[in-house]
Image 1 (cartoon, rainbow, N blue to C red):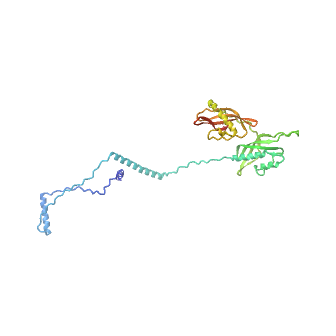
Image 2 (image 1 turned 90 degrees about the vertical axis):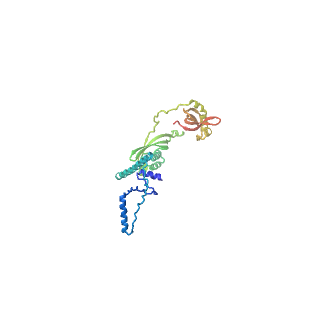
Image 3 (image 1 turned 180 degrees about the vertical axis):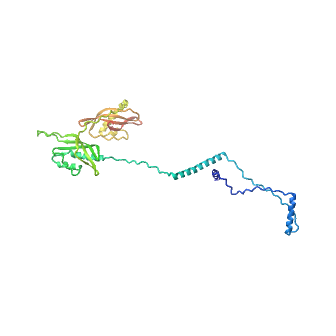
Length: 372
């Protein structure tokens, strides 16, 4: 603690404290002058006269007191500070006064320019869909099913079905002459075009079936029913928390082909590995059709079985993509027989190399339909 106090006292540039047990220094004695012989006689005479006046009778000449010499106390001696101590004191003073100056400046600045709180980060609000697309698709599909289904034997059934999705008071029997018969087998909703003002137009693809033309020969059976795809565009409005059909829809055509696409990149084939794993893939697809794929797949793999009734006619082609490592992928073109029909299909098959103490082999880990 004494060392710490000394450092603090030096940093603050204060005089060092006096120890508690130290006696105050005596002032240096004043130099006494010895009177001369003549002066001494006059002093002695004065003392005699004074004694006679006081009634002491004969006075004796006082002898001169012995002079005692006092040893003066040793004054404080200034000791020169070491260079390391002097550097420490200087550094401490600079640091201390820097803190004091910083506190003073900061306090004064805060009087005139108070600290303003940092602006809060902007809040991002995720906007939901501008239109209830799924609700519009559901209502349009149901309406298309009712609209394209009619039976002249029961015309009121169609009118009641249409009333569920049209505004109250709408004449749902209008637009049909109450003749003929048609049934909807499937209604598939498609694109929803927003038109503004909470209005939209929904495209629905509908598969309809109509009875065949009756035969003029009563002994012959009527022609089979005809199936076809038709498109229906339905105008809808979002109001009062639900979707309603605002008017008569329109039948439109269905595309006969898809749009053009760029050629897909085909990976280079690993000819050697393809030949090496050809039998592995053929065995897998044979057991795959039997529902026993787990017996020929890699440990831990799980491949659901195919539907019953599929028989392997052969693996038309098998090519493993170029690559490295113990996991590889290839493309298999397989021909199946389903009843009397034959189908050619494409699969992406993932292989993994399984090693044991005796040997190693490739086994199927996963299988996916298609080439995408």
